[in-house]
Length: 374
Image (cartoon, rainbow, N blue to C red; front, side):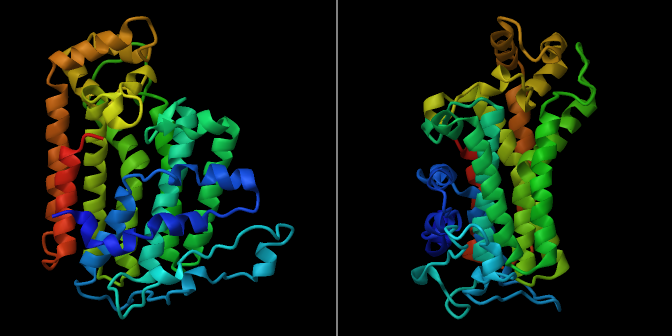
């Protein structure tokens, strides 16, 4: 079963709605901000939000109840619109839900607030891509020149900031303080994870020794940088639907474990898949001085990697030597095994959900993560 088909109706309008959310009166900013929406991404995160929304719709409701906002409420500003647009009269208002995609609660079990959450999730993710590509000096994204190459670092950074601003406004209009707190924390987590990634180990020694904390540090960074958005978005979807606390927690655990597995597989692909398949540079992690899971597990078997990690693979031949050590170690196998553990935990977390196509889709997403090649 293809999980996409379960939420195909909602996904059909996702890109168009996001592009409307990103409208700017400044033509250059408008172009840069929408650049990564021109080519279809995988849209894993919004799909998970929609699947979780549909799967939890069949679970018990809490006394708090869902927000149940009308199809237009997510577009209605809290502040006087003239104040919001003061001195910026050409700024396109946030008004996204197109007439042909504005379902009512009567013909869809996914609430308007949950559909908007899916769009917000993708906005935050896209903003992180814009910023990451500048930090990592990336040259391609989705088989096209990266935004920093196409428009320059300054414009790419500013476009990412603009996306976060637009996401924040849309988030506020959901009128749910807990959901706002969750997604605002995600934005902070992304920055915290990026700072942790500047170092390969907690102490950042010149000649570090492998310890159990080495992997723990990596997993903490991975949660903040990758799994936080998925886990907190899944949790927010359940909250907006008015789910009971146990369902909300299950949604969070599903997202957390799947998010960690997703990144572990991504780290493996950097060693095993070509650039043509990935749609972005392969082998980039080592070139950037980053030690990810396959290398960290290989390091436990070959302590000589410590010197390379300490100098961030900066000397000639370091990258090739590290790749060779990883290839003859069990690093890739251990990474896959750990990813499978997290996938199993994700499936277990939602095992008590009522059987439905959406639940099956969530389980199938776990299988797809383990099989993905890009």
